[in-house]
Amino acid sequence: MAIGDLVPWNWNKKKLSVAKSRDPFIAMQRQMNDLFRNFLSDSPWDVPSVFSEDSGEFVPKVNVKENEKEIEVTAELPGLTQDQINLSLSDDALVISGEKQEEHEHKDDKAHRYIERCFGSFQRVIPLGAEIDQDAIDATFKSGVLTVKLPKVASSQKAKKVSIRSV
Amino acid sequence: MENLSGVNQSESREAYLPRCDIYERQDAIVVLADMPGVDEKGAEVRLEKNVLELIGRVNKRSERHRYERCEYGEGDYYRNLRLSDGIDTERIEASMKNGVLRVVLPKSQKHRPRKIEVKSA
Image 1 (cartoon, one colour):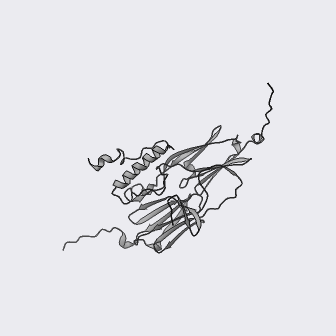
Image 2 (cartoon, one colour):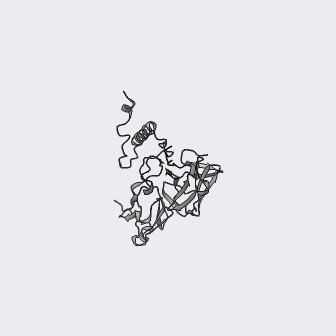
Image 3 (cartoon, chains in turn yellow, blue):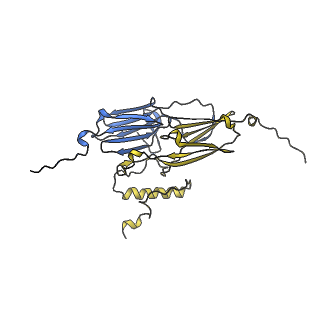
């Protein structure tokens, strides 16, 4: 039995894009696949990633802050330009999506590179707990950080009194 | 100085470890470091004895809000990389765009691949 028989069947194929899964078993399977690939690779550039939660997909991190007047959503999107980011608002959620391109000038240097940064298409859906004044939304993008300020509708700021009827 | 959880401590100040891509071209090595929130004024590149230090400083904003969801922390970035001898340190260039620090490390002349002409003797 050759050592090649022990290798997972798809170890040297390009990574399939799958939905991001928080299932710990799927994450562990990915790490095992990466371990096999790194162990059996000839290239000194295939080093296990320092970042343990790596899955190769680009999932930008998002912070959500809220006070009485507004909700503020910030997202880390380094290396993207403004026109590569799409923002849309549905009734109860803010959707941030787009695609981060691989660096063009380095696309052909596959044998001589070490990659930690991720690229690809992404989408984050952020549920909003309050009604938003859609006309007053302010979104800015600076130094790779997207900041979206969503002012709440004035009437939703007051707590409504609920009366109890006797039965 | 670096630990593997993504945060390192240097000079008794905590900093985040930026994700880096390292490419090798024929004439240079290129390092790209993700430092969202850092502009060119906040970025610093230092070289001392073959150790390249990448530093990014962010302006921390005042906390007027309450976190509903917190996936990343705001803080400075720090990473160091050991360089081999084949780098022409006088010609290192660094630039900052959209939160990505790009450092180009040209290879010194004698370390570039050269084609040697074969003459008939």
